[in-house]
Image 1 (tube, rainbow, N blue to C red):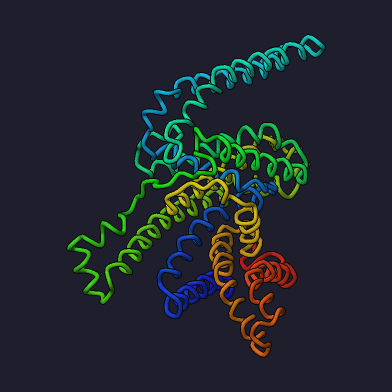
Image 2 (tube, one colour):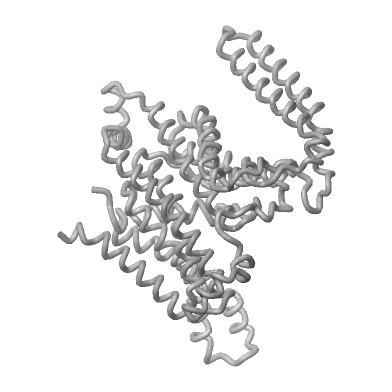
Length: 434
């Protein structure tokens, strides 16, 4: 009975914390926590699918999240006609030649017998393809990036509804995960972690430096939104009347309305993914994945293709992270490649899965909400605590100024301490796998 009520009690506690935030801080802050908690829960579901169910150590979460963000630009932003006229087709031709070069090199590796001839053939194909790609694509890239670089300087997207970018983000992340998995999933768990981390950093570096695709560090702003703009709501007669009925000023009411709409969309996505993940976990496929996780040797002896199943679950988990990245970029309405830091995503998402309960989908969702709430609230609480502790010191004291200036670092200390306590007293998480 207690085990059945435990998830309800934990989620009720999270709801109470959010309501407390709305009552004593602001409802805007509470809704931001809810929305980011929903996105974090989606990311945690993807990582739990890879690690909790299949035992794959993926620390390249940030790269797949960034690919989801890139999908929102490629799908929803309007195309820049001047940039396409300056060199868009040449860039596409160069990319096609590069892809064909890699395909020919792989074909040569598979078809030719071992020996110096195969090595020379592969090197020749790669060198010729590289120089052809550079000759065709480099001048076109320079021409595109020179088109009004202050506001565009890139090709733009397809101009489609932004909600289409969410599944496209999952597909894009899944495609890259398939390529990574074909080359890295044969590695041992620690080497797999190093490989996925390195590849994710390569993805981020590409987004930061290929201005023709993502504007690089200049960022893409003004990404279309699936919900109304606050300024449009503030002049709509029906909304002004509705805000007056609730006793709210139009500005506050518009921000709350937008965040609530985002929350509804994110909740729909989370519920669908959670339902699919639960069905997968309780299916014969899920039991097979747990058997592979617990004893690969026995699973291979039973005739299971372990590498293929690992690739399958790696692609699925990465696709979920890509969807979460597209959702987050849509909410922010901008793509900022420099914001994809390992601390913000990789570390936090892993803490969410560990705290919630590895192998339990509801635990991953719980960990997403709880850890994000702590991540947001620890900084103001730390500032408040340090101000109380330093109150006996005289104003202008070097020690007092130093402690107050570095109170924000209490966030890292608190998260680390919280994780250590969880691992000590509840090593299987708040909602452990049955």
